[in-house]
Every structure is written in C-alpha cells, then in structure tokens.
Image 1 (tube, rainbow, N blue to C red):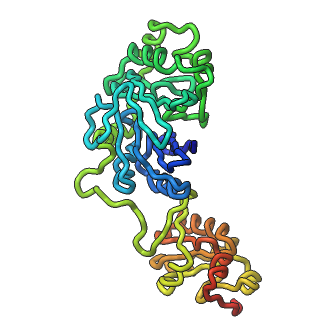
Image 2 (spheres, rainbow, N blue to C red; image 1 turned 45 degrees about the horizontal axis):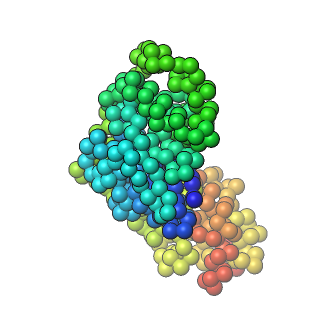
Image 3 (cartoon, helix red, strand yellow; image 1 turned 45 degrees about the vertical axis):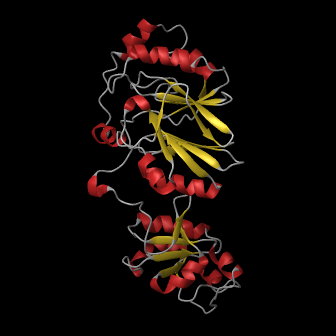
Length: 357
C-alpha cells in the first residue's frame, strides 16, 4: 500500500493519501483547498487515480479541497450522511466501507467534536484516521456544530480505543509537529480520555475550556457544507498557468518540458543560473539565454522584465528550481523551471549554443 502524510502549515492540517499499488486506485482524507495543486501533483507522480475524497467532519479552520479535486479528477465526495452537505455523492454511515483497489477503509461514526465526525479504519486495523475526535494526547473541542462531550467520550472509548494496541492513529491536526500515535499510547497517556479518566472528569474538563472560535469558522463552515465549492463567480478553475503547458511538481515548482520550451521559447525570458564557465562548457546553453548565476540572482532582478514569463535553466534542474522559488517570492508571477535542465535538453537533441556571455 502507498501511504503519504501531508501537511498544511496554515491550518496545521494533515491530509492523508492511501493508494493501492496494484490497481493505482487512491483515496485522499481531509484535503485542503489551497493544497489541491500539491495533491494533484503527487497523484500524478505516483501514478494514482483518485477514487474519492473523505472528510472526517465539517472543518471549522480550513476549507476542504473535495470539490476542487472532483473538478479535476472526477473523484467522489464522501462525508457523513448526517451532515446533509451540498454536493456529497457518497454519504457515509457507520459500518460502510470505502474501497481503493483491493484495500478498503471501514467507517466508524465518532460524533462528539461535531455531530458528523467519522473515523476511518484501514481493513487490517493497522491504522486509523481519527479526524478531531482523537488528537495526539488530546481531542477536539465539543462546544459547537452539535458537539457533545458525553458523545465524544463514548465515541473515543468504544470506537477508537477498542482497536488493537498497535494500531497507529493519525489525527486531522497537530499543532506541535507530532505526526502519529497509537491506541496503546492514547489509552495510557491521553490526559483527557486515557487512564482512569471517567465521563464526569471528561465533561467537567471540556465544559470549561472556554476557547475562542476558530478564526476561519465563519468562512470555513458554510464553504464546507458545500464541500468546498465557491459561491457564484468565485467558482474559478484551478490556478494552472495559461501562458505555457506546465506541470506542477510535488515540490511546488512549475516545470516546462524541453519540447514545449522549444516551441514557445521566443515568448519567454530564459535565465541560465549556472556559473559562467558552465555556460560555455560541453553542454552549452539555450539559444537566447541570459546568464544570471544563482548566487547573483537576487541582486540582478532589475535586469529582468517582470511582465514577461521567465524560464529558469541549469545543468540538471535543481539550481533552477531554487531560482524559480526565489523569483516567485520576489514577485515574478510567471515562472517555470526547465524539466531536467541542460542534461535533458541535450539528450533530446535540441539546439544549443556555445558562444560566450
């Protein structure tokens, strides 16, 4: 099985990708709206087809990427049936199974943080995805969206902590950078729900948290009740650049293939970020390229036209990828990296120049 744990630093949200290597089918748990390009890039690079997105609940701190993923992949949107969200084409109930290839996730209702919380358990019970019902050494709040400390206590104790001791638990969030826990750990060390804590202890604790509402709650909850679909004219397409045929890599860098650059290159500024001796070595350089070594790039930005697209080039694509990131942070809106650099350009037999700077 293919498994990846992904992170959104703004909301401290974990997104989980599970794939069946034999069939190429995959599921995505708790996708984040802004991270959809990242997730699409990873699916493409791993050769996976997304079957469905599964949200553990209606989030209050970020907007789900479910609708955006369906727009691009045709994936189903799965969410608790009790939520009645607009756009769900796979309403889930306790006991359902969601398959990907020969593997599947079992659905367990774990209300309490919200009334529509679900936990997803892998078929062999080696891992479970608990959303906010059970966090690492903690749990989600219970004071809005139909939350109930009484319900949450029962949910966690009966549906999560009854899994095998060595079952790994993956939450929807962690604000300290901790990535995983286990049933045995939480049963023993969770200060809210483990050890000898009883229902009275838990309810008394949760009823006195007095937390402010999440900053994005007024935006996130209505949007997530539409499965992340924007309203009205805001239903924009994915932010794929239209100035060239580009591919987003999992690193977050847009790349252009050598043949595409050959076809469109006259429209772009081609910036070679190698050192001067490399510019005229055996690999040569692209015709019309401007040499701006990576070490000098930030001090020579005024030499570049911010209105024209920039394609960064180096020997293998590594330094130019870094240049692409730096240019983007410096305000250049149209930047791409040459996939494979000069090594691939020359290997494909494309024209090179060897004249000096």
